[in-house]
Image (cartoon, rainbow, N blue to C red; front, side):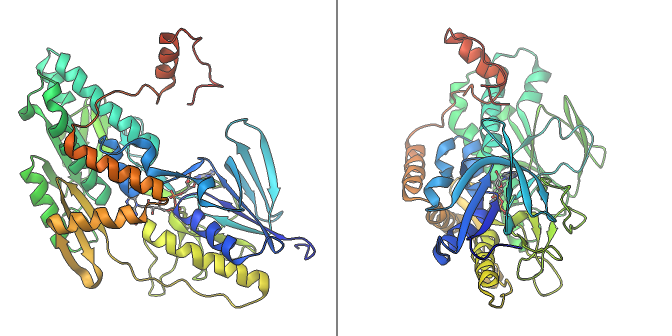
Length: 447
Ligand SMILES: Cc1cc2nc3c(=O)[nH]c(=O)nc-3n(C[C@H](O)[C@H](O)[C@H](O)COP(=O)(O)OP(=O)(O)OC[C@H]3O[C@@H](n4cnc5c(N)ncnc54)[C@H](O)[C@@H]3O)c2cc1C
């Protein structure tokens, strides 16, 4: 039982769209003497995922699509740590500090699970260890480096079969992330190919594979048709109705038995709710999402709440809300209001929201957008809407200006092909060696 003479402690796990939205509303509604708010997250920034494909193609700078968590909050205590375990009976969280490695635990009165999702490769053979994901900031940076790296290798290679494999990039998953990634890949290569005199544009092959019958499944059919038509016009090969069976070092095998020779597979075929604290005694769906009721309270677990990609939230019509940022940022304030109501003994409200629609940028100033009422906008107007909407949604005026500046520079200059040696321990070690410093060990180099 919480002690009424001290402020209630509310601990939020995860500093993405959902966690930040909860913290900000709690700050606005609760006085410091009513509640202490703690947010634990494993990065010190929140990532604006809709712009991630543009980071992977070098259109946007890596740092411009993240916003420091501390700059978004006023009085919440921020802890840079990895949440490791949740004991719902003792109402206690165990976490490991990212920088020091120290393990600590913290008692709570209310806990909010906002841990998001992670890439899922569904246990397909050879996939998890070979594919490039597009989920985290590091994924985007690693993919950008890979694309530059394969152009360098292809430019130097004398072996025509190897060149062909290097210059074939397969993107798996025809949802909005895959479609946007492909559009960006085309733009990147169009912009930088003149730097590589031995790479012929006609040798480049970009393939988009979707297991379902059309691109952008779940959205109006016109959006998928338009995207496929525009991407094909720009040279993309589109395979629909054929799922992935597995991969090896030299290629991808589809369920039909078809094989595509490639060294680079980008995986945007699925996410699963965060497996973090999977051992906690929480009700979960088969996919691993935490089951909540319509007020976002975890069923049967006092003081526990969940939202965003890690939660299964009933929509009141027999289904659940989709895992999108659009929903997460609206679930946050409602969940915070319900915690306030709980602390003050007031009734809780159910979450209800009608999707505003979805948009996918196709690159080359084209996009598709689903508007309310299932109307569809395509081409330049949709692209303009995409850019304006997401620019305004990006947290922080400074970030908006930086992104607007990147977009302006992109009109004037080719994309940057400098390879950043920061993403692997080996690269960090060799960069330290070049600088005449001692090679870094595990305690100073990031994994
Ligand atoms: C490339 C891409 C493009 C997308 N585009 C769109 C779009 O255009 N529109 C849209 O609506 N949605 C989009 N989405 C989906 C959207 O990003 C998610 O629905 C949204 O991020 C969910 O918010 P969240 O807060 O639940 O999770 P996240 O934003 O993923 O936040 C989870 C947080 O928890 C932290 N965390 C995880 N595990 C731990 C741990 N053990 N300890 C501490 N912290 C932890 C993570 O570091 C992260 O900060 C896109 C997703 C991707 C990958």
